[in-house]
Image (cartoon, rainbow, N blue to C red; front, side, top):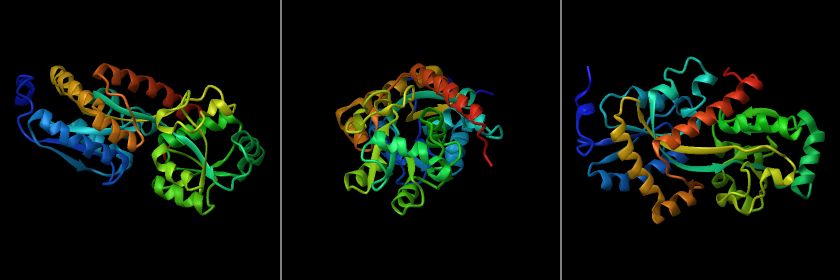
Length: 309
């Protein structure tokens, strides 16, 4: 039976409080983005928008909750892994990103920055790379967990750069930074906003960014291609999604509102400070990005035989 909200006019939606579900804890990057978006979206819709954290399984618990919601007023603030390779990495994930979630709008994107301790060998990025190639598996790298974009990106980087560090997963990026400062690991791919403060303080070094060229959110960091690692590009991103049952007309209206909000000068500045280059896309634009990233990241998973333990 079709829920009553699904037959309501586009202009009448929403008719109650809207939930914006986040799969990560308060203070995390997705949570901060969701809370920055909630107030202006509430004003635009004329209804309260509340942020609700449903933490666990790398954001997949929240994504599954959104996919299965039937109230017509539940949205999700997603990261790219939840909307692309979740089921490729783990066939037991209870939702299909491509079938069960409706793309609304791509909010922002950012490269990852290859980061090392300040006392790492080599005076330049190229010298560091040469030393890392010689070190082989004597080096270790950290990621926020198996199957995260940082993990997949480093596995791809190993093949592109001719390095062989051993993977050590950590609960999150703050723990990774602590481990690098303490000498437990020697490199990691980090979001620009996470590494910037320690790099500025001279405690960590930024070797290169995973963007095709210099990124606005890490303009002072050379791209990895500039130091000789060719054909390597990887980005993290966040987006708003809805259950696949959301009518296309409602999704289109909501997408236009979200895009206008994130492109506004105030939000553009707030998101830039959080380390995001604002996009603001149509549902079709986000779907295209989902499909291309699913193919690219899925290829890394298969070629490197990455599995959840």
